[in-house]
Image (cartoon, rainbow, N blue to C red; front, top):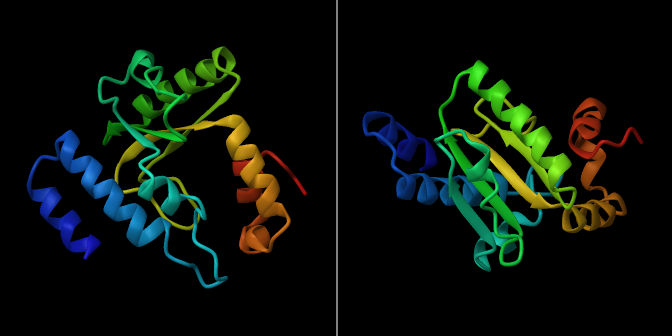
Length: 164
């Protein structure tokens, strides 16, 4: 069903509302479904979606101010939609996110793109914004399960910053 939806989107220009509905469908069908190891790609995505703890941000202007609009008092994660950008634009966004993490040490910013991701590629280009304390607690919990056992070591280090 998701592939059919994406084919239709390629014919029509995606607006922000269409991005949101497509992202939620992608999350439900790809991110929340269990992998062969019995775990979903993100074990917390379903709850965030169902409790409406996801803030969607239209960041197609590719400016830091859009990423700074994340409401950390209300939401657990921000999904900032960049549109489909090229490698130079992606590099500039990554520089912006590095600076924002210095300015906002309580937040994590990372790109999720059509090229990134070990288990699944995004259907478009985004910046995910998460509460650092919240995600660190969740990672601590997951370390006490078999969740990370199927992750390649280099991907584990890239995502968590840990090498063990």
